[in-house]
Figure (cartoon, rainbow, N blue to C red):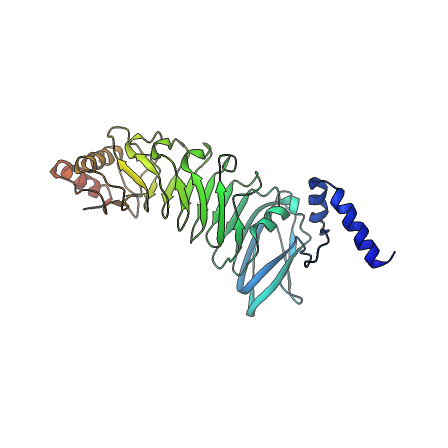
Length: 331
């Protein structure tokens, strides 16, 4: 058959198959014919890469190989960290060989990767854990993810996406930093959530009162967030690390409902619009003292910026907190 006729015939046949069949074909590197360069799903773009690190865990324990360029290949076991240093900054593709994307359970990458995150989601549709470390230049919608992905830790990259309730189902960790623009409501997590840490240009909304997550150990909101509500009405023990900054407007504290799920380490409640009165600051300091026995390092307790200063009513509590290991900062 003439080459042109074959491509035309295959293109027509491809247009009639369903999305599941297309996914299977694409997993084997068969793509729809277009006027664009065909991307192999197991090849990932690098940009000015120097030191690159990869960890991949597979469900069945199988290993794989990484072709760093045309001349260098490294073989790796499941969960083994491998690295490669380019003598000069490398902009091109690396290739994963001998790796079935359906078997990929966990991925940790760092240094020089610069691909659309949707490519990895498509290649590894059963992935449960994904971490991007320093040097990553990946981009795209991280919220439009496989339902299996419940551990998301994006330390660098240029990401966006709306995490609605369905996309947060069963999620245990959501960490997104450095200028990303994701959105979510803090009431939409499942009870599975253990770690929330979003900074940069991310936007978190919702009522602080809605926090009711018994497994939560880390809650850190900074950036363009607009969380409001009453800090004293949180329906769950405070995590060891609790940090609210930015544009949030949680400007009330009702005393009497404060507890910790472990020894506190960081309690920071500041922001230009988080403004407690002197009576509320006093009540919060007294409750923090009553709810804690020791503070672990770094022991930060910060109630500054827009809050009113405390009065003598909380002087004893502040002294007690300092003796327990807290470094108390107020106006």
